[in-house]
Image (cartoon, rainbow, N blue to C red):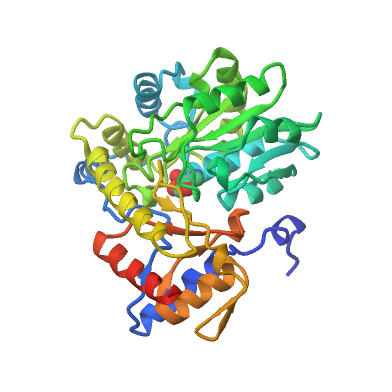
Length: 394
Ligand SMILES: *Cc1c(COP(=O)(O)O)cnc(C)c1O
């Protein structure tokens, strides 16, 4: 059967080769330590599950309003007000089927062929594909290690053309594990003043920040920033709810309404009883997120310390998300255990085959010198995996 040019242009995920092989090795009984996870290793808190069960039993099993129930959008508006200092009415919020859907749908709503989207490296693998699917062009800006892989004012200014429609920001970053400081964001906002450039701010890891890092929403910087920003967030990472598929977008009324129109024909509302569970999560007073954050922080500190003690491996202390993103390029053009290491792909492949440790190569994130290690796994696994990595590289 014919396959559309659109679908043909989307390659299979380049990160999947390593994870597929890791799963296969596990199935063969090999004791693989996996640092490949892109989701929390915690289960969804019980009170969230209970809220879904209660909603389901109460008959909340039909359609809701396309952009989500008014109750949920009010709870999101309250959260954005109290935690982020952002004033959005429920009309300015659309609930999506996960933040991944928010990214896709928002780009479909605002981008046209010929538009350019500034995409700093390292980027989440989904961004270039969603930009392409909207018919727009990704303008990839290579950031520098000495700037903690954050885009600078000079780099941003140089990338802007009269076709620039959007800047993509993801802080805290997957895969980089860094977080932009308020001053860095203010400097970026200043560059955009007087332009028509929108900002898509993916804030999914907002609650997972470490070592005293202060998170600030881009839209909260100024009125100018507010008016040009689509704020994307969701329940997956903070509340360990990846399988529930709940994300949301907040922004100016026109794009949010456009997203609602698209959503009414694509997916309709997010799962009805999951929306009730989301209200329970967002209004939680038990501190469930903080408990998980504290554990992530402990692991991230340990992992970064261990990585930096290994010769030819260097990484920044993660300030957000749950990833270390070390530069391992000092080991390229070497032969380890008979395998030639030429890039992040061959590094990850040899590490998995020879030491049974799964990491994700950096090249699909636009960062060929690096590999990504997730610390969304137990301390015991982290110790074991890093022992193996250290031994393998020596
Ligand atoms: C995990 C992730 C998302 C989306 O997660 P959903 O489960 O679709 O809500 C969005 N952006 C980044 C950077 C992520 O890592």
